[in-house]
Image (cartoon, rainbow, N blue to C red; front, side, top):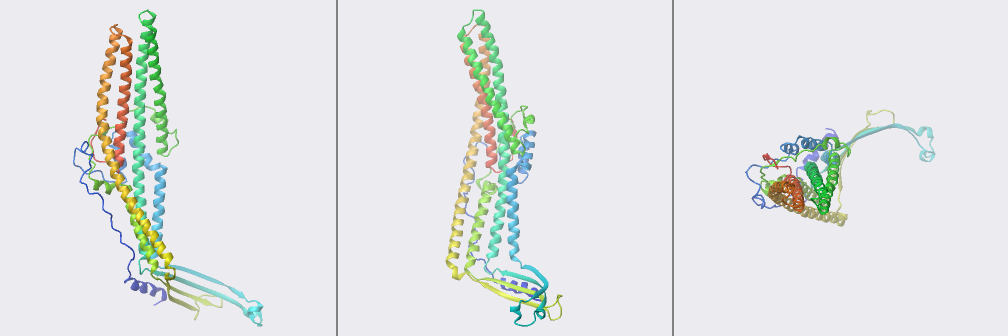
Length: 479
């Protein structure tokens, strides 16, 4: 049996008694509440929340009944540069994992050379130099294998596996964030377009009112004070148009960049106004335990804690001897040619590298690894608390903004009725212009507040989607 064939057998025999030093990972305890404190206003059913998957982001938004939003999220999840960066980091982590796994196997190399050697006069020791002109031929296959008696290699692979899992969770987190950012910006765009429509409609009404006041002043039935008030109200309302137009432009630029395009790429497509997307009729956030299993930031934090725990074992293994089995099989001659009779050469050796003389540095590295693991534990626990806080806040805002929007919609309806009645009575001469002015001002404020409330309600729903790490099962209804 050749030397190279003996190496795996010897190593496997020795490794049977191997153990992995350092602590084994144990998942930390997490809050065990059966429900969220703030879900009573939204959880109307008992369905399971949507499972986290690569397609959940797009599928969820298609339920909102807005094909433009769906297309934008499709584009963003394909071309967004932040997502591409996260994928590249995952690919790099996966490559490092493949590299780490190769440490379980022998490292095999080959080398060879052919040539001649002419010794110097000093090396020839007085003999004719031509007699010392020696041909050289050699070839060899070399193998070395670290015997993982104390788990240094296994802990290293374990650490890199969990780092790779953390990078995969990072991709999910970026996907959810991108989908939420596209949706939030899209809602802000459509809301700004609605507020612009309201401002322009009020400008048209107020211009008609100003024309009526000017006509009354010209006929001697009105005062210059009424005309000045009407003109000031018109200019104040007109000024809002520029603000909303700027918001629309900024949102269009942001959506283009989120979808991996130049800022002006979507202007023509999005300039036409449309209504806000449909909002969910009911939302079941599940339980805190469901949430913590789905949240990618929690998964990434736990994976990095696991990796830090495994690295304690990597550092601890340096307290024990590192055994390396080496072998070589080859041919070496002082002539031209390989593997001639009698030219074979081989080697098998067991190398021992022990850092006991450098135990201070080893223990310092172990202490550093333990401190890193303690820090990762604190980071994980903080991530869990922030995830729960984020969800409680999102549930509360989603419920309260819906209540607020319902009141604002009723206020806008009543204000429109009051403004219409005031205009009719003013035209009949039953009231003075001040009451018309007040009614128009109230109408504009009520309609603008209603649109703003609808935007914030939709944004709160999107924030809840993000907090729940990718949505829930629900039936859409008009928001």
